[in-house]
Image (cartoon, rainbow, N blue to C red; front, side, top):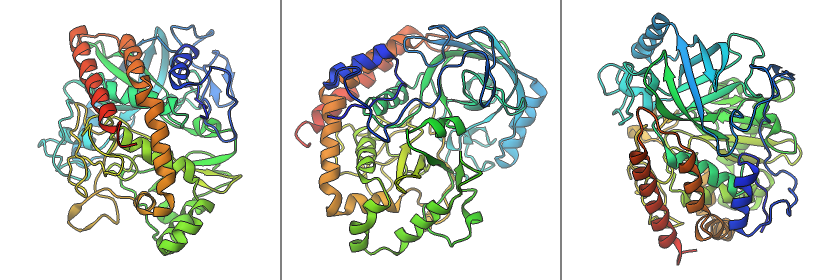
Length: 475
């Protein structure tokens, strides 16, 4: 077994994970292309990307993504500016930035930018509860948010929006995730990391706005240029899919795709051409050509693990879901594409008995797959029907994933990846062990009692047990 974890987990948690999966910590050498830490903890000095906020070296307790640490975060903003931000969203779904100050573990960072983040999650803010005033429309999800409770809202936090080059411990952006305490998302991130795949780091905090009562919230690093540049040990370009993007060929004009795929790094030397070239090939390739040539354009081993992981975690809102939640990595050495997961807050909330060959989906409405129920907090990045969606408003679907899973040429690759992930993450006890360690770190708040946390932990533990049992004789 190849063990190549990122440093998302600290050394103690990493040692625990490797012990459960049969790998000795420090014994394995990272192979070429293995995911590595996206950003290291800052020292309070100037960095390549700008000026580090706060002075001094972070301690084990104040390093944002340190294992075993939870944090205290508060934001202060002008109430009139906040009201204008909400009004703008209610009017037409626009997400305007406002300036604010943030305090993290006692360190004040002034002049940051914040804006609303998400799509379906935010629709209950649109005024009529059905999202008709917000971008995309459609039935509102049970998001558990309210503009009257600003500490409940999902936000994008940008440290250098108004202060050029400002960052916090090397980070320029953080995503304040919807819901509390979303143990399933934290566990899904940890399991993805434990499998050796690229992911994002996270931290739990008690959180307040303008002196409000506190909520327990999850902070996740929002991939930026530094994240992209440090993601692998080979050079490449990282692209984020927009919620309304279409994974389809739409002509050769790169401008057509600029709003659909945001390029995060190497903008001075690279562009969207590799993605457009691939989409054109995908649209024209016969099944025989797809089988014979895909491995020349896609890292099929990595993609098999990605697809297997999404099924194993019962995440119906991945690259084929309505939210178009994924990043594309284009390796400049191999000239191949791989997929990075994003927005895992719907993982491990659906049918625990879904088979490895079953299409998992949200609500069971797309292709008859195993339905998923939205947890409190809804779906952060699910959006309106993308361009190219099926008639009648159906959302979701991805030609690459669908053709890959339907191809006999890649069936054994997928099956082998699935079996390996099952043993590594579920049968070994890794998932159950990680859940215990995560739950031990989650801080109670005015909005979350220890009893409520224990109840949610037990619910997720039951899901893990059911999923492990259901797959035992299928892999």
